[in-house]
Figure 1 (spheres, rainbow, N blue to C red):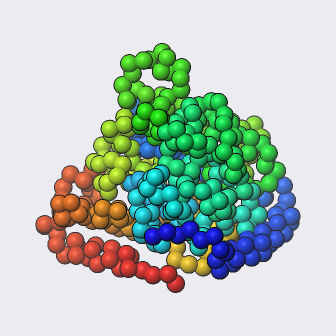
Figure 2 (cartoon, helix red, strand yellow; figure 1 turned 30 degrees about the horizontal axis):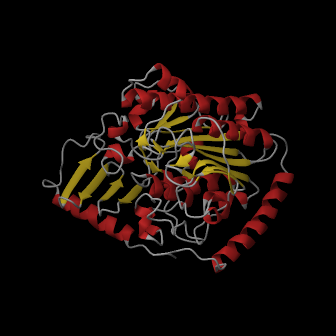
Length: 448
């Protein structure tokens, strides 16, 4: 199914009108705010293919002091899920607040691939978190990976609410040449550019520049690192750490290279956090860190004690590290067992900033009271589906899992069995049926 449309759609028009009106209202609100009471900046950091066992504050053996500091200064989630176990659908859920099953094109249940999906892009009817924040007076930026359509920059981030774009459209690039194999892939705004430098460092530097340039107005910075995902080098899929690491460690294992990539990203995050501190923006900025999916074990990742990995619906594929910091608003050193997903980000940011949610089906819920006011955790159920037909349904402590290949059903009580060791499906058929019915109800929901 092709979903490119070179003619304006009704929703494009409505998005433009909505954004203009909301923007004016937002600026009026901002103009009446006293110093220190402006709407908070949002820094959303999204790592790529980083397992929950690859963050030291989750018990991992890779030291990530700067990522850890976000949890140290705020709240750490112990039950955080992404919308899908792979890149494209996870990013769809993050930016639209909708499960990937809602996308008009079912290809969004899997990663978009150059040479295969060149005519596919995020539908113009989708409203992103950047759209609603821009319409609420925010300066918006995507620095890093898009992966929601790569065939044309005209259908890229700047067509979906981002004022500034620096990075790349496909799922991965060479960390040194910034190409997809041999095809140029590195953009500033809508122009392909050539630059020297390691991708992680370049993205960090641009994020710092954006913060410095917009320090006096509310901003939304979506910093989507491509680390520690492998690079798409001309010779294939390669883990690519900074050159100096490879020069000193020519025989390093995949795990050692992957570790160096994570540490390099953590150093970059440290520079971004230091910029906020230097500009005295810490108390004006909500900082969020999430990984986009579970890590790929065959590329050096570690998902802790959880079964599974990137690509499947076991906990290791969909449970990820997440932490949030907002000094003076979120209590430091908080740990929450709130079940949540990255599809909740849009609704939560709308609740915090006063932005208006789009008038369509939104699956995410507002968790701002849980995060900021430490109110009791909310009931939360989450739906998962892959392009292979695998299904999962998490409802509080319970999880139902169906794997299409073997036609196998699983039921777990995650509060007692977080590592999915004991399948209760055969001993609790009524619970299985209940979970299946609730899952089917979610799958069949239509637009309002």
